[in-house]
Image (cartoon, rainbow, N blue to C red):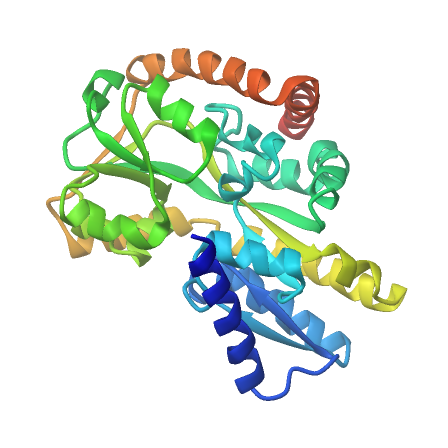
Length: 336
């Protein structure tokens, strides 16, 4: 693993050098999706604002350009990258409290409430700042990417249907606990191995927002989409803290304003996105089944959520408990 990471870092440096001239005014930003997906759309709006309001250039590196999620995080912490967009799902071992976003049924499915929550939340905009700073990261923005859906080879209408199903999860301890509580056999895998794993039946299920199911063609290797309402995918945009702290106040303001401009854009961009992308899936594969679980069908998943919440507090102690309580208060405020 260390050899692979070292090789990726060397390749990264070579790529930056070959790209001609990364000067002091050239910043680099990597993310976990393609340019056409939600993180890519956010990154392009962020880039447009930076370049229109400063003399800096921003280079964008989509998924796969610089390695897997673990690689781009290491590169951001090392200062090779100035910005990185990564889900708390992959930073859970680095920042255990960030796993709170994987407590089932904590986040609502209502997009307007979510938009208010991510914009105004004290937990996100204040409490998490120190936690990310301790890892050499300046947290700029968190935003939602859509309700998570399960895709499987067999239909799912209850937790019993996940029994012995090898279900791919991100390398996140709490997500592992969630799918254990749901009755599945959680199987952590890097994203690059998921399509092939489903194709060869190494795994039989995975979860992601609807737009991602379409863009990554997950429907080609699974047959059933299930909405249990258990989560909404969250991602976080960060800067290398030494880089950020060394900037002028004017440059810091440009970055903060760019993150706000991109946030407002991405919230609007996502309205109706799940519905349009689901329609594309059904056009490409009409035999795909789509199930929205009823309240009764969800009951076993909801019951499991209490077990996962208790596990989160056990993993993170008083710090995690305080974050969880603050998020619940923030969500209640956003619901009004």
